[in-house]
Length: 317
Ligand SMILES: Nc1nc2c(ncn2[C@@H]2O[C@H](COP(=O)(O)OP(=O)(O)O)[C@@H](O)[C@H]2O)c(=O)[nH]1
Ligand SMILES: [Mg+2]
Image (cartoon, rainbow, N blue to C red; front, top):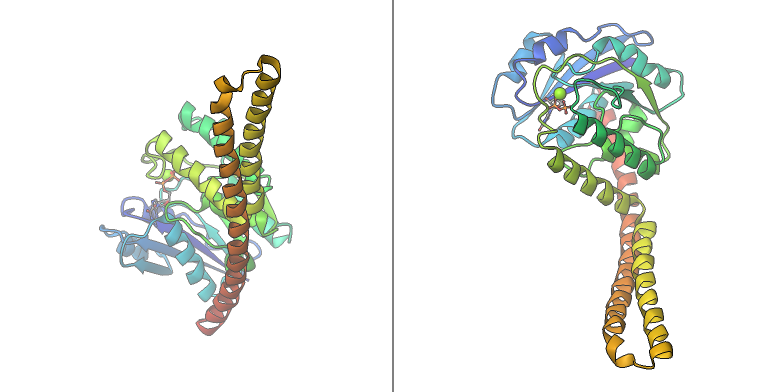
């Protein structure tokens, strides 16, 4: 059994050496443990420093592509390296490297395909009050959207099986955490969470710069991925909402015509109702279209899994 620990890194020359050095080189259940650093077009010496610190592999993306893209590229590299299990962690040593054994345990026991390290976000003291609230609220929304039971949805400390790595796709650039969870839920993969330790922050987060910006992006992300995987409920839900509002306005019009016998003053609500009905029909048709498109995407994703499997076999080293 082979474990590959991957670290996505962008301009991390200051921290990457310590991060690589503290990774465990023997983990119960594995014969081989290797380290892969994905250097996302860094302009500093991240790649050299990582190599010097003992990283077995450094994947260099020639231009900066964003965390989500780098993470998926890392999974492909791990598959080519014949990883049976992949762990990903951060370059700024946010997560306790000593807990990697704990993280992979549910995978080894066959109890899960993806394990997410839970930082205990609800009570984490070095998070600001705002960040704590958003993390809790966000994680709750993600639990609802994904049907999984993960307390810390944006944790980047994760373990996944080879099979899960073959099947997960990332559609956005900036962050993969929430998206892959919703996907895992929709693809009926087993997701588990374990409580892990953390280290004090050594620098401010690059992903969570302004809370409103982060919440906006993550919110849009959740909507987008949910619409991608469940187009019918999303668009039919919207159509029902719009249609019901229109119906209420029609009732209101009828009420005034019957009681006041004066339809002239209420013709506007009838107009608005007509607009709402049109919007409802549009949303309904959009749902049908989105559903047809999502069938195509499902087939494409299946082809991609086969293709990845073949490529990984071909390049097996
Ligand atoms: N490849 C890549 N990695 C990134 C990028 N932004 C952040 N990272 C890495 O993702 C991890 C987490 O980033 P960080 O800024 O600490 O965000 P935090 O998780 O909110 O603390 C670190 O290993 C960073 O080097 C990026 O744009 N590309
Ligand atoms: Mg960090």
